[in-house]
Amino acid sequence: MSSFTHQSGLPRASDPHRDWERAAVAIRPDPAVDRPSLVMRQITRCSRKIGCRTLGPSASDTVTQDSGTDASPVPFHASRGGGKVERAFDMMLSLTAIIILSPLYILVALLVRVKLGRPIFYYQLRPGYRGQLFRIYKFRTMSNATDEKGFLLPDLERLTPIFEWVRRLSLDELPQLFNVLRGQMSIVGPRPLLESYLPYYSTEHMKRHDVLPGLTGWAQVHGRNETTWQERLDRDQWYVENQSFRLDLYIIWLTVLQVLRSSGSSTQASADLGLFRGLPRSENYEDLR
Image 1 (tube, helix red, strand yellow):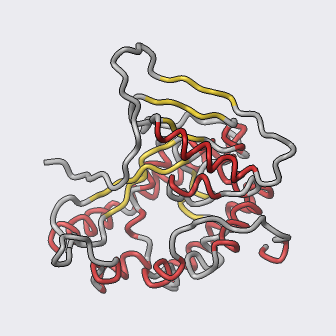
Image 2 (cartoon, rainbow, N blue to C red):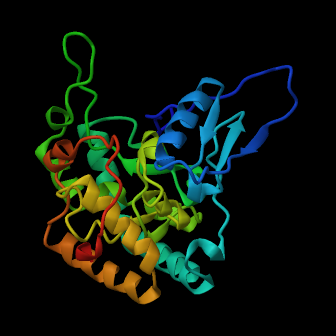
């Protein structure tokens, strides 16, 4: 029996009369359009009806038709805002962390197996560098408890206190170190959000896909889910526009302090934040630094 379960679907094109696997259509933004994100939203809605994926303005302005799940490692690009030094640092730090934290991997896996059963891990498809989808892995922290109608109970009712602490300490995120090794993520960067959020980003906020997503980021060390969507997205945008190796080291240091203080995100804060469904055009965010 597999230890993985899939919790997000991806439309697939299945036409046996075609021998192609992928076709891309270039989309040029219209300068006369005040809200490019509205255009992208309509493109996404239409494209999904025919089994396409939509990548936003900073993702090469393309709509890609794919005959299967795109979960292969993302090739490394120096243009992601970093370079070979940053990539080497990611690999060295992630590999070292995996070795040092291996007892924690075993402990959390056993805890999930005993308290929740199988599967131990779950994955979701998330947009990463240039909007390319990849599988992000986590330890399970919630049961599959349902109500009398067979629907899953709210998150807060499926999460026990012990797994709430697992989340606060970010132990459920440990499997993502393997995403870093594969080049799909970086140690520092905007957190990869849900694919369904893509149509709702403004042009400015789509810049989050100009770099690799990260295990931690500028938004995570400034409130994480205990902020508003405006603040969170603006901080990610600020990071992309001001990224440097020195800033990454500072964010890693703040992350370590946050974890030691157990001041991470709570499930209640995440529930209060809610799903992202769009914002007014971003205003000045200099005060969020």
